[in-house]
Length: 162
Image (tube, rainbow, N blue to C red):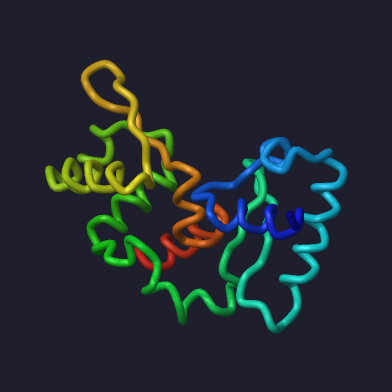
């Protein structure tokens, strides 16, 4: 079996970043060897003839669409149908997290309940019960969905929503 191909397949199929330790376990191979393979893949994807890149995040490694190509292919991504209301709710949650559901409702009115439910269903946010409300925060899936870091997403959403 081709070890490099297995690492690449694991990164491709995963819906969230994968740690070096996890990749090493999947491949049943020493972490140093996996690290070398990851560095090779990263260099390979940096070439101009690739539309993807290998990114190391605090959660692990993942494959993303290169920024230069995102606008061309973003409509192919799942959840590309996020409405203005959903995007506004997501912006509020991302910028102010952790935030209570009650606070989001203050900003958006009663429609916020539906937005929160939909965003959680799509895996972009998580909620935890807290007294008479819920505490809301974004998930790592958000970075994967947008193909950029949380800071980049914040900047884009702030520009879009003013």
